[in-house]
Picture 1 (cartoon, one colour):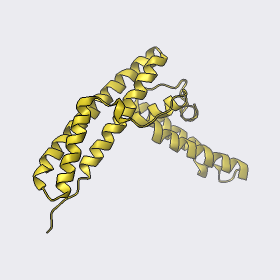
Picture 2 (picture 1 turned 90 degrees about the vertical axis):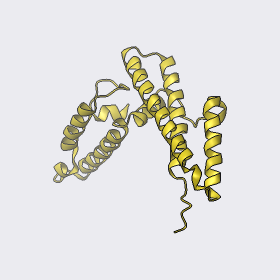
Picture 3 (picture 1 turned 180 degrees about the horizontal axis):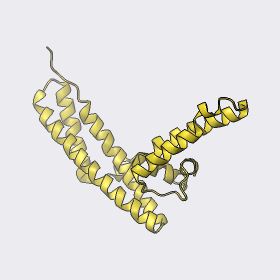
Length: 180
């Protein structure tokens, strides 16, 4: 996988040490920086520029556990799709319904539902933190013993995380009805 190779990892892992990743990035950045190739041929300058660009993309992707997992899954033949409501737990769907009702009431000028919206956002943030912990555990398990079933589980958690992140964003962007 290109991003892991650009940072000189011997093998791609889902779990990465952030300090090691940063150290590798800075080392490779110094080696590949286009300024080091100022007197090189046009072809060498272009190659350095392209390698530096890939390195930057690799670092941006691999330092974020969610983006890293999506990249990893994509290269293992998994499609990362949107979480569909038919795949969501019924208790979460009920919370989504209540959030949507509160948002509608807020749009109609009822500021009293703002606390309910804030509570829902906090609940969704808590759910997302739990998913992040589960992902971290699955990453480690997969790195120790690669099993395709674990990747299926990771994909499911990533989809659920995306769905919950969208709910957090919706609750966060709740319009203000303040007319002052």
